[in-house]
Structures are given as structure tokens and as C-alpha cells.
Amino acid sequence: MYTSIIGHQGKSEEPGPLVTWSERGVVVRHLPNWPNWIFRLTPVAVGDRTIVASVEISAPTGEPVTVYAYKRVPIGTLLRLASDPTAAVRAVVAGLVPDADALKRRPYSTEHLCAVIDVYRYAISQDAPPRATLAELFDVADKTVDRWLRRARDRGLLHTWDEERHAGEIKEPS
Image (cartoon, rainbow, N blue to C red; front, side, top):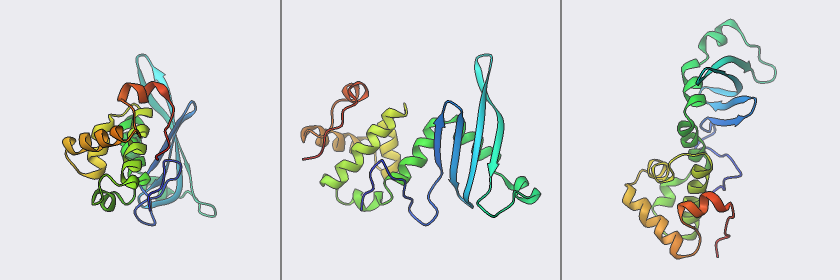
């Protein structure tokens, strides 16, 4: 079953990384091999660029942050996720549509088009390229994504990119 943008559901018991941004920094959860650990990265503006000033590590309840665990923290992965919004969008949409392969086999079904629309709108809200995000998630060519978007627009489920970007209203599928 398709899970809407509100939920985060992975393909297995360990979902992909969930990255959230706020004015206080970046929070990364659900890193592979780090179940229930939380990493908070605090950015600082230095001239015309932003750097990560600190990384806070929160272990799961009842587990200590040991020297061994501290040395294993995937700092490179955390920095990549924190600095590349597109990487985070890809990680989140993979969790939004855990059954992308199954949906791809039923193109133009309402369920499939709703998944396409949710991913499209989420990508737009994160300033990520929506067509490229969809093509990567569903592992299809850009032309296939264009057909899906055209069908969604023909059915009145989706507006143009510019209208979606500025309108902020979401049409319910009929």
C-alpha cells in the first residue's frame, strides 16, 4: 500500500535516512547500521559559505555513546546528507514510496499517480528537481516521468510546475 508524504516508511525494518532541516540545524535519523541513533548537525555561516560547527550524537535509550561507537560515526555520510538537499530528498522519497517497483508496474492507476504527485510536490517544496527525483526513485527515463505527469494533469490531479510551486493548494484525487 502506498504511504502518503505524511508518513515515513522504508522498504525494510530499517528505513533509509530521514533528514530534517530547521533554523537550529539538521537532524539525521535512521542511518543504515545506526538504528534509533539521532545525529544533530549545527551549521555556522563563515563568509559566503556554511560549515558544520558541531555534531551531536544521541544513542538509543539505554545505550551509551562509547569511544568505539564514536569512532564509527559516519561523519562523511552525515556531512553529505546535511549539505546536499537533493540527497536528503532522495532518501525521504524512497521512504515515502516503499513499493515504487510495484507501483511502476501499474502506471496511470490512481494509486500510482498519487505517489507520483506526492513525490513531485515534495521535491518542489525542497527545491529539488522533481522530474529527476521521480526518474531516480522509479528507475525510469525522463520521458516516462513526463508521460506520468501529463496524465496526472489531464486528469486534473496536478497543475503546472509554476502553479504547483506558488499555489500551495493540493487537489484531492477524484
